[in-house]
Length: 120
Image (tube, rainbow, N blue to C red; front, side, top):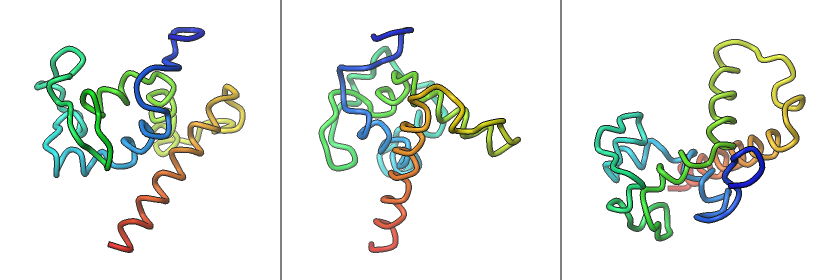
C-alpha cells in the first residue's frame, strides 16, 4: 500500500486491471465470474481459487478481485458512473492529479476493446 492506503504495486500493472474493467461483461458471461456483474456471493477471501488464464494472460487470482483491490481504479469507476447520472463539477480534470491518467487509461482500454470487437 502506498500513500493514503492506495494500492500502488504488487499484482498486475494498472493497465491490466484497467483492461479488466473494460471487459467485465465478458468475464461475467464467458468465464462465469459472477463478481464481474456485481454478485460477490461466491467470492472467498483473495479469490486464489479463481486463478487462471483470462484476457490473454495468466492471473494468480480472480482478475475482478485484482480490480477491486485497486482503490484508485474503483474511485475513478465510481466517479465515472456518477458523472453519467449527473454532471460532476470539474470532471475529470479538476480532481486529484492521478484521476485523469487513470480515467484516460480506462477510456483507451474501452476503445481498444471496441476496435477488437469490430475486427472479430
